[in-house]
Image (cartoon, rainbow, N blue to C red; front, side, top):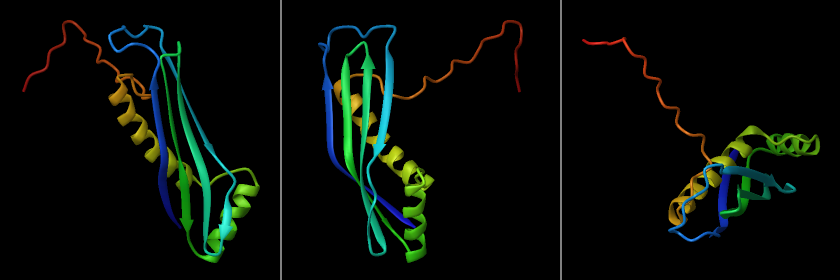
Amino acid sequence: MEVAVRVMRVLGERFVEPEDPLPDNLQIAVNMNIGKVERQGNSAKCKFVMDVSYMPSIARITVEGRVITRGSSDEMEKLISDVMGGKLPAPIVQSVYTVGTSEIIIVCRSIGVPPPLPPIPQPKSEEGIGYSL
């Protein structure tokens, strides 16, 4: 099955002044919604929305688009039955998440807010242990 993700709309709003410091207790929530899947022969389409919100409310970012899948008749039947059963195939979810997150990171950089990524863990320094080659 082929999965293509098309971004149709990107919105980024910063609600605080650029020179104001960001709060220390910032929480970031990411929501991803994938709409009703409509079959059209050996392809299917659906809409998606990814929304990032911050608490306290310093910014909001939204990415909207379409997912287009193509495959054999059997693959499309399985896709529709999976969706009717309440689960989306992993390739669709992963593709939407990857494309949506990429767009969100670019917008975060443009408006000067932290992206919704986990922080990089800092290595713990242990005194008294040294390594050399």
